[in-house]
Image (cartoon, rainbow, N blue to C red; front, top):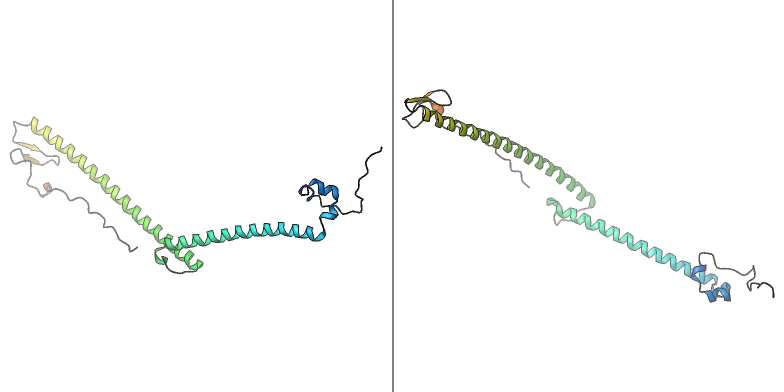
Amino acid sequence: MGPKVSQQSSAEPRAPHYLQPLLPMHIKEIGVSMFLSVAHRLSFLGSLLADKRAHHNALERKRRDHIKDSFHSLRDSVPSLQGEKASRAQILDKATEYIQYMRRKNHTHQQDIDDLKKQNALLEQQVRALEKARGNIQLQSSYSSDSSLYTNPKGSAVSAFDGGSDSSSESEPEEPPTRKKLRVEPS
């Protein structure tokens, strides 16, 4: 016997190459033309396209819903818009204004913090100087117990019997530098 001759003639329609894996083996043997009419092929391709379109529509709907939820969240984060209806353009405008306002407010607060840090450093420096001066006074008073006078850190003579106060007006405690009054802005 010779080689097997195919039952299909070259004139008989064949399924496109991309549909070949989808067809069961026995249908290929029977003949593609009996199984896949033109209408059937179109409906098969149409259902593939419909599935693809439905998937695309679902993804697009999900994307739009996410954007909508994000705008609602942004609207609720801006105090002047909370609970109000506003267009997306209004939400973006008010959010921009609010961000700029908060940046200015943060800058002001940072300046206040920096000023307070400087005041704290100055006060700590004054405390160390006073503690050092007190230590020097105690040392001087212990060495000059035979004398009734000694000099304070400012150089003026002080009697050992008057409790360490000199008569000048400079002996009153210095007022700490006045603190900058914080501005309170309406929120």
